[in-house]
Structure formats: structure tokens, C-alpha cells
Image (cartoon, rainbow over all chains, first blue to last red):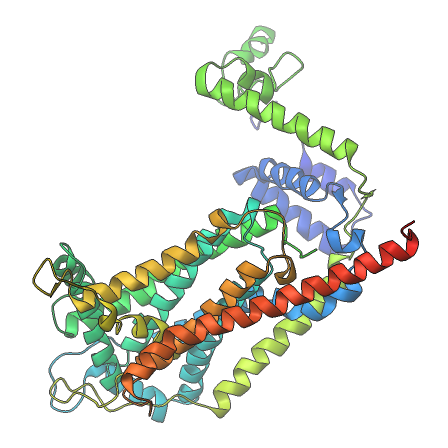
Amino acid sequence: MSLERKDDHDHGAWLESRDDLSHIETAYLTVLMWLDKRLRIVDYLELLEDLYYKVNMQMPKSHTEQYGLDNKFWYWYPLYALGSFSTLAYVVAAISGALLGFYYTPGAGASETSSLAYQQIEFIMLELNFGYFLRSLHRWSAQVMVAAVFLHMLRVYFTGAYKEPRELNWLLGIVLISLTMVFGYTGYLLPWDQLAFWAGQIGVEMSLSIPLIGEWVAQLLFGGFTPNPATLQRMYILHVFFLPFIVTALIAIHIGIVWMQGIAEPH
Amino acid sequence: MTDDTDTTDERTDGGETGIVPPDDETPAWSERKARKQGLSRLTYEYFERARREDQDLRQQSSYVERDVLGFPAWPHEMVRNLALTSFFVGMIIILSATLPPHIDAPANPSSTPEVILPDWYLYWSFGLLKLGFLNPELSLLGGEKLMTDRTYGVLANLVVVGIVAIVPFLNKGSARRPVEQPFWASVGVAGVVFSFTIAVLSIKNLVPIEEGLLNDLTFLLPIVAGFISYAVLKSMREGYMFNLNRRYYRLRPPK
């Protein structure tokens, strides 16, 4: 009598008994069984399967199909792609931004001529191989994203796509467009050049002009009442830590709601 | 020995998992929900109603039900998406290779540059900060302003964003195209023109127009543009109605 427990569901023996499987299939099943024994993937696969059949439920014809509007609709198609274009530009900016982060240091400490941040930008632009291209890519994808977001909002406005079931997504879109501009603002403060310094000054004055809590907001966001090394540090953390998490999550919700509600077509 | 094997049901250690598989007796999710009290009971009842409503609407609908969506996701839709994506990313790459960004002089707190401008997409907001000339002076307070000019500018930003935010709650109904809603479309045109004129106002020290005139134009041009687009859209709508009526009376001539 063996001490080893008998396997009621001897998947290994079952796998060996199957001689009709290719190498790829055998390898796939081996990995799947190994993982499933430890993580019980089968439960999650059932969830996915359920989701798959829910997604592929029979759908009614879309408005354009029902009334044969495709022939009148196609030339508006680019306007309906602006939302995905801004998402694409966001992805390009995220990738190039992560690469730029390898070389950038947010230091604005006292120095004779220029700050550490500015020297790093000079290094990226002048010495690093393809560094100017990387920075250029980041900047241009950010510009294109903002432009696409503005045009996307205009498209949604002029086709009345914000109407009844979609009011919440319109509000979410306003939050997103504002955060996109905050993204841009924190981004162009990072080189710590003249523009950055004086744009920072304007930002400080804007927050100081808020009644009652103005000084507190300026301290929190800018670390003082004039642009200083703390300002650069805070803008950097906002730009590479807070905003990416918040904006990515909101974009996911925004697109998820569009998926649930469908695209509003003009009629 | 046989006794030992029979009692394995109670000894879970090393034996079976002890998890009871669901059978017909096990209450389903909806049944468990149905037994609940209070708010969850209400939620359940509402969801049941909503589900029934969905089903009824689907049965009444004249829409054609079909097995798959009209346009296959793979490969048709994916090829189109890939083509658009690579075209778009290629455009960004060409732009960035040909037009690298400028680097300014390093930050120098002791010398203010002559022109301070944010990026182009913040011009409108920057212009709203310069609306101090509209800040009312109250004679009650002896000609003093209720709030400082810069507070007024920040407030103007909030007001503009707020107006954009409440649009869906003001403009209701099923109209979608600009021709169907000339008023709201012309409000939109006025808004777009205003975002340009306020951007020009933000760089007023570079614009060779007298300041008073520029201030007036900032608010007059959007209104003019709004009126023009309202007139154009109204007449387009009249044109559509005329065509529709003509077809109608050709089919059914008046006696």
C-alpha cells in the first residue's frame, strides 16, 4: 500500500493518455494544470467565459445600420475618432515620458548659472543619443493630446452627444480635460527655464487669489509664495505620480461608460 | 481499516476540501437576494423590474436581432484601427523629428521676461485672468471693488467651466444635429469664437489694437458669430422643411 495519496482526478495520466495533442498543446496544458493546481485559475476562467457570452449577446442594429446612414456618415468618421486619438497620444506620452524620466532630475537648488533640472534638459537635448527626439516626442504627443481632447469636446457638443443617458460622462470629460491641462502645466514647469519660473509665478498668484484658503493652497501645491526648489519637486511628483494614476483611472472609466452606453450617433 | 476510510468525511485535514458543491437545493444568487430585507430587497425588486422592462422592450422592438455585430472585429475592424493608429503615431513621430522643442534661458528670478505666456491651450484661461476691467466697482463701498482683480479672474475661470458643465442639464430633448437645435449650436459657435478672442486678449500687449476696442471686440465678436450661425442654421432648417413640404404636397396635392 502506497503512502502517497491517490489522485482522484489524475490529470497527468489523462494528459499522457492523450496522444492526439501537438507539442504546443501539451506544453500549454502542462502549464495550465501546474498553475491551476496552485491558483485555481478555472474559477476565473469561468468568470471570463461568462463575460464573453454576455458581451457577445445579440445586439440590436445600430442606428446607422438600421437606416442605412453609412453613406452619409463616413465623412464624419475622423471626428468620431478624436477620443481614441487623444488616448493614443496619451499612451505615446506615457511611454516617452517614462523614458525621459530615466534622465531627468527635479533639482532647482541654488547654483551659479542654471539649476540641475535645466542642466539635465540640456544634457537630454544636446548630448544624449536621440534625446532631443525623445523630448520632442513627449512634447508633441502632449500637444496633440490636448488638441484632440478639445476637438473631441467640440464634436460631442455639436452632435448633442452629451444628452440624456450621457450627462455623467460629459461631467467626467470636463474633469478629464481640466486634468489634462494641469498635466500640461506641471509638465512645462519641469525644465525650470524662464517660462517655467514665470508660469510658476502666475500659478502661485492664482492660488493666492482664492479667498480664505489661498495661502494654504499655495503652500500645498507650490511649497511657498514664490517659485522655489520645493515648487519644482511638487510639480514633478504631481506630473509623474499623482496625475498619471488619476488620469489613467478616469480615462478607463470614461471609455468604459462609452462602451456600456454605446456611441451616440446623430440622426 | 474500512472504518478509517469511511470517516474521512469528518477529517478534512488532507482529505476532501470540505466545500459543498452547489446542487439544486442551493439557493441561487437571485433567491438569496430575494430573501433579504430593507434596501437590498428594494434593489433586488428594482433590478427585477428593470430586467423585465429590458426584455419587454426587446420583444416589442422592430430592430432586427442578429448573431454578431455588423462589422467583424477581427480582422476588419482591427486592421482599420491598426492603420489609423500607425498613421497617427507616425504623424506624431514626424512632427517631433522635424520640430524639436525650444529651450528657453535658465530660470532667473531677477529678470522678468517681456512676454510671459503659457502653452497655447491655456491662453483662454490666461485671458480670463485679465478681465479686471469688468470687475464692478461698488458705489456702496465708496468705489472699491468687492474682490481683487485676480480673484475675479479665477472666479471667471470657474464660471466658464461651470457653464460648460451644466449644458446637459439645460439642453434636453432628442435633437442631435446643429440644424435641429440652432440655438444651442450657435451658443457653441459663440463659445468657440469667445475662446479665440479671449486668447487674443491674453496677449493684448502684443496686439496692435487699442485696448478699449480690443476689450469690446472680445465680447462682441462671439455674439456676432453666434447670431450669424443662428441665422444660417435657421434658414437651413427652413430649407429642409420646404423640401419636405414640397414632397408631401406633390404626393398629396391639396384639393
